[in-house]
Length: 454
Image (cartoon, rainbow, N blue to C red):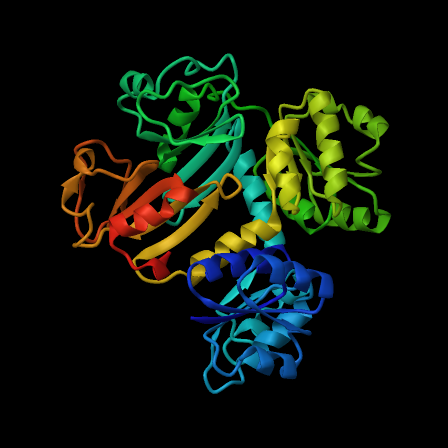
């Protein structure tokens, strides 16, 4: 497949790297010389210097014969024009654009077939806000990911010394709760990612990831010692698009919400458009303001300003004040990776969320989706059991998966099953597999799916 990626920022670079590693013919369009040099030194892709909205640059990149255009620059206008030009070719490629301006998003007609005709429109801010809302709704969660259109949930939660499962083997927990449909798929411990076996011992401060179906979430939380609702007092620092979207949805759910916003004009907008949320004009990094708002009484702290550094600083201040759960908006990969060590609970990255959505759209064939987890240390693969594969026609207990691979769900039609040992995987069934990223090549061969599907 020949792909053109417009923009070599975090999203463009990450997608280019993955597609290149999978054998795609990738061309990156970028105008910043420093960024071009970084790409050329680290990726095996062709780079064209210039703007993705320039027809000459697009022609040089091979727009006339490309199969896919992914426009992910920081400019909505460049992304839209690049896709518009791509749509004028005889061979019209698939077109994906990242568009963030709410005014464009509210005028949906421009994305329809007679105009831009986008195959996928990415709104990173909305995706970040929705992830924040998902995490807030699950007591004690530091990560929540949906699979199979919401019929399967992955929940990450940190184990405290008081958790009843600490000191127990995974097998012991299964024996104690045989009726609960839960599978533990990963443990993040001291910068190490572990795929748990029956003999794996759970320890305090482990970040444990488990999958279950929606109606079993309460049982999972009880197992993890998170059965009690953590409270509904939410403090949001930053009243931009993300802060507004989160506050608007939280107040509808009955949460008590406060928003601190520096810009006075934006505060007026928030006060006019939020019905129950308390809006405060001030600097969220000011310890005095945080103290005035009784930050020690807050249940969940959400920092979503335009400054990653300010988000991290205020979250650290909130943790020091005793807030149980802090959620911070960041985009730089180096910031995301340091969160577990500094004590901030949840890092939300709009750009990296965009990568996951784009890759799921691109992938075809028997692999339905691939989702990267835990800073790309682990992957969740939703695929189909081919009749010729090693998993079809066998019970789960008889499938000899490669090392560090676990089956998290079996999908039979519209029904999602948390598998037990005697669960049969029939040809055509969907399966969701969890594995370390380094184990993907072994799984490819095991499933007998062509590598380009991954």
